[in-house]
Structure formats: structure tokens, C-alpha cells
Amino acid sequence: MNDAVTIIVGAGAVLDFDHKGIFPSVKNITEEVLKLSIQKVDGGERPLLREINDFIVGKLNQVGRPEINRYVPPQLNFENLLHVIEMCIAYSGGWHKEYVSWIPFPEFGTLIQPVKFLKDIHTYDYIRAAYGLQKTVMDIVNQYDASFCEDKSAEQWYRDFWKSLSGKSNIFNLNYDNTKENSLGEYEDGFPPIKDGEDYSRFSARRYYENSRGVSTIAHLHGQILFS
Image 1 (tube, rainbow, N blue to C red):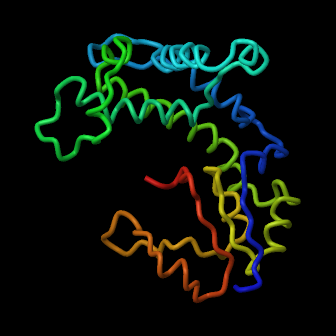
Image 2 (cartoon, rainbow, N blue to C red; image 1 turned 120 degrees about the vertical axis):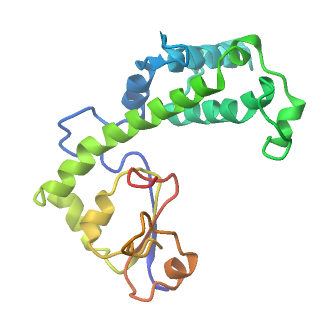
């Protein structure tokens, strides 16, 4: 599709939907994530996501000029928070001497030392926090994604827009939903149909690039709720 339109889709794409559940803005999703309590390895519960968020925001307040921070207060959204937690998962094995070999350990981890607050959190508590965050985001996205898929008359303006670009667009999606796929009907995302006896489909860069059917292509750069 040499004459195809290249489209990059961001967080505002579905905000005009008639949402029945939580309005899926970045702000609202982040607020829901911060309400979570995580069951710790020792069996207790802890608002770990809120604690990590507040700790990092406090540290960010110490960066830069106070008069500027007053006008643009530091804050994390749920994706920033997930990135912080994933980094803590990677490095905490070294902090707690859990690695039996240097091979899987991130090399940069040898150059940094954590503050006591981060070091005192168990690796598996970080993992549970990341899981809870991701599941919350997926549940919120699925609220509108599933209803859109089930009700073919919903948001007709949205469906018509994407259908008008069918076979004429290369879509790069930063969101986690499948509304564009459901609108297009036919598309190429590089994943062949799952074969009998297989549990998943493996991405094929060749299939995606060659696009032998000449349909619209779509790539989820941040993943999507059906990926595992």
C-alpha cells in the first residue's frame, strides 16, 4: 500500500464513546490504579502502588527549581508507574542477592544502590503490584472494548471512519483496545491464525511487511488486552 495513510492513534481516540463504566482517560485510570491494595508475600495487604507513586513524586519534587514545580507539580501516570515498578523488579533480585548467576542480571544494576524504602520491598511484592496495575488497566479498557464488539450498532460514526480507510491505512496504535480491528473487519497485524493444537500465534514480521492481501495494517506499539 504505497499510497496508504499512516495513522498514529493516541489516548484520545475513544474518549467520545458513550462510556457506561469508568471514563478511560489517563487521569481516571491512574486514580483507579492508585486505589489498589496489594496482597503481600507475608499475607498482609498494603497500598503499595500509592506508596511507590508518592515516594517517586516526592523525589521528583526535589529535582529542578521549586518555583517551576509549583506551577507544574510532578506526577506519574499509570504507564510511568508501571515502568518504575518493572525496573524495581529487574534490579531487586540484585539488591536482595537473589540471583544465582550474573547472566540474567541487568548490568546497570551493578552501578546503582536503592534507597531503603525500595530495598525493603520484596521482589514478589513488586511483581504483584505490577500484575494488579496491569489487570486494573485491562479491566477498564475491556469495559468499552467488549461492549463495542458485542453491539455492532454502537458508535457508528467511529466504525464508519475506520471503514472509510479500509485497505488504505497503516495504523500504529498506542492504545490497548481492539475497536479499530472490530471496525475494519479485515486487517493485517502480523499474527497468523492460531493452528489446532497451538495455544498462541507467533508474530511474523514478514507477514506484516508483505501484507499480501493488501488490507490495512495495524500495530499495537504498547501491546493490547488480548496479548499475553
